[in-house]
Image (tube, rainbow over all chains, first blue to last red; front, side, top):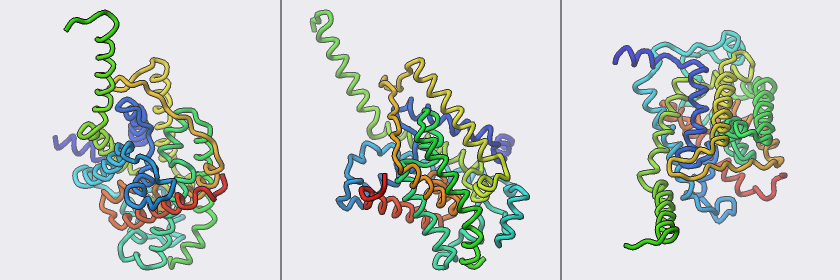
Length: 193
Length: 163
C-alpha cells in the first residue's frame, strides 16, 4: 500500500493526466448526457446567489445542479490530493521559464503557485489587486463572454469538432500570449516586483 | 392484469422509462457527478496542471507539458465522442446522447481574448481555481469571487456587448 501511494504521489506525466481528463468527456455523457464544461458553474453560482432579475441569470439553474456538484468535487479532489497524495519533491519548472520569471522578480519556485504573489499578505496591495482581483475578473467575464473555457471549448468543443471552439481556443492563446509577452513586464514593475 | 399485445404494457414500459430517467438525475443519484469531480480534481493536482508556473511555461513555449495535456485530452475526447456517435451509445439510464452545437458569435473572439489575459495572470482557468483552493492556496478564493463578479458583470451587460 505504501509503495502504491509512493508511486501515485509522483507527479503524473502529461500522457497520463491528459487522457484521463479527456475521459471526462465520455464519462459525463454516459452518466447523463452532460456536456463537459466548468466556467458555466460561475454562471450558476450567480443564478443561485445574485440573479438580481438579470435575464442572463433567469433560467432553471436546478437542472444544472450536476455542474455545481462537479466543481465541488474538484475542490474536494484538490483537498484529498494535497493531504494524501502530495508530491514529496518540489515541482520541476523549465530552466528557461525560471530565468524569465527571475528577471521579472520571482525567486521562489518551490510550490505550484508563486508564494510571492499568492499569499494573503498581498491581499490589499497592488499585487493582490492585479493578480487576484483583476485576473479573476477577466477570467469570469471572458469565459462567459466566450461561452466557455479550456474545458468547454478547447477540450469538449474541439472534441465535438465545433469550429467556434477552435476560434475561442485560438483567442484564449492570443490573450495569454499578449499578457505574458507584452503586458507582464510592465505590470510586474507597476505592482512592485 | 390482462394485457393485450402492443398496448397497455408498452405504455407502462414508457412511463417506467421516463420515471427512471428522471429519478436517475435527482437527489443522491447526482452524487455521481461529485465523484467524477473529485477524481478530476486529483488529476489536476497530481498532473500539476493547476500550477501557475506550468501556464507560464505554456505561454512562453518553454515546455511541451500543457500542450501534451490539452492535446491528448482532446484526442481522447474526440475518439470517444466518435465512438459514442457511431455506435449510438446511450447513457446509463438509456437516454440518447445528444451534444448541442456551439454557435459562433464574436464573443468567442473578444471574450476568448479577455479570458486569455486573465488565464496568464491567474495561471488558472475556472477548473484549476477550484482545485487550487482545495490544495490550500486559500487566497485564490479572492480570485474565485472576482471571477464570479466578472461573470455577474458580463450577465448584467450581456445584451449591450458586441456579438
